[in-house]
View 1 (spheres, rainbow over the protein chains, first blue to last red):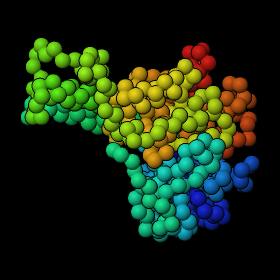
View 2 (cartoon, rainbow over the protein chains, first blue to last red; view 1 turned 90 degrees about the horizontal axis):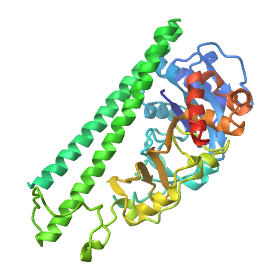
View 3 (cartoon, rainbow over the protein chains, first blue to last red; view 1 turned 60 degrees about the vertical axis):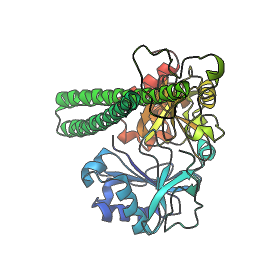
View 4 (cartoon, rainbow over the protein chains, first blue to last red; view 1 turned 90 degrees about the vertical axis):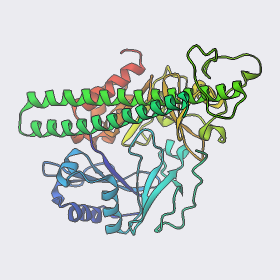
Length: 153
Length: 261
């Protein structure tokens, strides 16, 4: 199962997010679910291709989610490409989680599309809080993030 | 190049091949899943189910290939440790040659006398204070607010992760590569710089995708009752995307954790 979960770590209006998804990936707005935390805000047309939602906890302001239907509709882009598209269109920072069980670092995409691996606070994550504590590599659009030593190899 | 060097290189190359094989199988699995979805969409249910079953099998094979790669990595680490022992024993700093019938034992075997010191710890565990596995991974401590990622590894209750971490700290685990260690048939990673240990794969670990883990959280919140779980408003968001297969995998993990599978 393909999983495109992109989390906005800066506030973003869900309606603008729907517009961005629709424009960037040629998805009819009525085929995008909008979840406000309790309900879907409007009926959707089948097949549903993507979903936007309020964030799942502190530090996560909104979320874009696409599964296999989104992958098929868009020609299976890399998750990074989707994240860059959304971050640059909405001028907001996004992150997405590691794509393998062996990896623990997330990827942050800044509003200008620059990106790099970051570390999130593991203990806070246990409590549903998404907090980026630093970058593993310099990210031009996120100079405020402290650089973290990767640790001894 | 010595025989030991050649053996180490050969094992390492085989590990890489196994990992590439796993990647190839995973790609095939993804294609089969897409095909199954397309067949289901046009109403060819029997073929869709067969294709989905093939996809499931491919996923299983990819897991085996990854496990083989981890085992080969572990073997390579042992060969390297053996080489170090041979060099030490021969008092030479040059290349070591492993001869048939050598009386030296692999590094993981207990030795006597001055050689009893444990092998040096490699990787981040050598310089980082290790912290326990996060509660979001532990079956008994998963809560509705536990974060869900694309890939989630759940630790079943019978696994003593603290004992495994103690083994890593003591140098009794095999350093696979980078921040990954293998101990007691399980692969762990060490986050840097925090030192938090996280489960990857292996005996007593269940790998789950986003929807499966979401379904498991719902089953946990509703005492294993799927019908009740499906009515949970916190699940409603993904109801359209969950299939019977999603629930079946979540159920199988739930049952294994309860000792019913």
